Amino acid sequence: MNRMHVVLGLAMGVMVTACTRGVDTNGERAALLRADSAWAAAAAAGDIEKLGTFWAEDAVNYFPGAPVASGRGAILGLVARNRSMPGFRVTWKATEARVSEGADLGVTRGPFQLTTSTPDGTSVTRSGHYVAVWQKSAAGDWECIVESSIFGPPADEMKGS
Image (tube, rainbow, N blue to C red; front, top):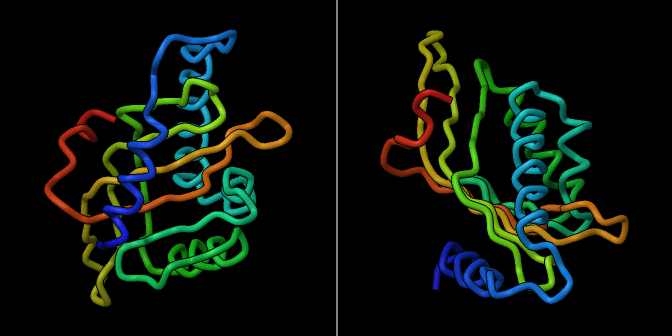
């Protein structure tokens, strides 16, 4: 079983949107979308320090073509290496967010675009899709615990964003 199947299986496990029992799942879903949007804005701005605030200490990142990054420090090291590539730019937009009935776990997913430059300066953009699994921190904030991205067909959802 490849790692994307594992991540998607985990994501499916938390995609419970049953009736609430004293938890405002709609409000938490909106908060999760805001967190994902702020995370994307920090990435687009190249704010590595801010990006670190969205990852749980023991998070895991599966970035295409890179070794698995386990732990916030390893993930931020991967981010710094990626950002050092000429012309690097990454954008994404959550097109779906779901939270568990207890609103302590959530999932976001959507398209992303990654741009880099070739040695001759030509800009190359690749598209794909990501899924992020989130948990509530002790402080009540959403933290990403698992993120996986795959390159794939053009991300039509990115048009106009």
